[in-house]
Image (cartoon, rainbow, N blue to C red; front, side, top):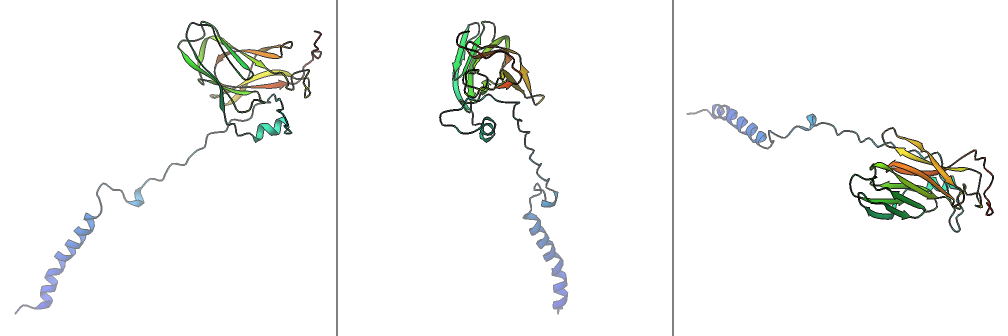
Amino acid sequence: MTNPRHIARMAAPPLLLITLLAGCSRMSPMEPSLASAPEPAPVVAADPVPPPPSRLYAPGPGSTESPALLGELLNLAWQIVGIRDVKVGRLEIVEASRYQLTFAKGSLSEDITCTIKEYDPDILDIELGPHGTKFLEPVTLSIDFSKTAADPESQIANGCEPVVWWWNDTLRHWEEVPGTTDWTTRRHVVRLAHFSRYVVGGKAGWKHDPFTETE
């Protein structure tokens, strides 16, 4: 007669093997364990663009904000205020808000869709696009600074001279753009080698006599 205890001992190893195989079947051989899963790479935020040296400001109707405070409170929600297709080999002018761009016939190597963006019509801070476009011949940018602090006839005039800065994405700093000022028309003119973000500010130390209508 067969001993029941002997039968149980003989059956135990196969049952253990079946249990282990069943457990392995539930784990895919291609699925890594939680312990070996790589940690997600930390998200590194891009360095914010520091504010430019200054911005020329023309207070809008009923505005009570100071120039510096208004510039810091804005969230820079850029809006397209001018857009136009510009063709190779043609003299083209694109105008919007306070700005006028003049393309020489030899400025472009290919056709572009030119855009002018601003976030506030009372602050002379613009983004010209397509961003990074380089020119074979400079493009002329003429800026109306009337009623700003650089306008001698403005109520907020402070004797400053208009100056333009552009944001250098590679070196991550603001660089001054040489320009000329027409005090009769209250326009500042610079020649651009490329499109970027440009800010018109006021340079201290203007020594000219105040402009008068009789000049």
